[in-house]
Length: 88
Image 1 (spheres, rainbow, N blue to C red):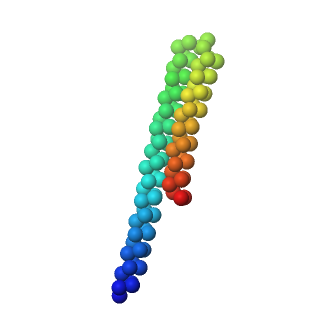
Image 2: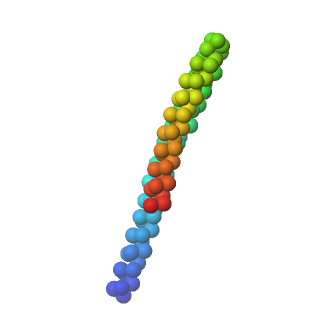
Image 3: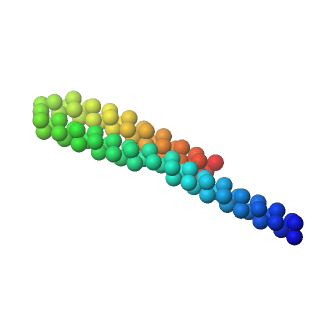
């Protein structure tokens, strides 16, 4: 009976750690929500700026692509952290 209790405790502890890993990976993906909002704001600003001054199209598009790349890099880092938590 004593050995059965130790084995059950180990099984419960293992499932608790697995659950914590899933919760941590889910929390790490919150950065993806911010990246999605950021990309939307960047391209909304591009459309607004282009509609106000169409002659600055190339400059505005360059800045929008630069902002998109930096925002997407943040999303990739958040996703990488979620995968590291989940599969390590």
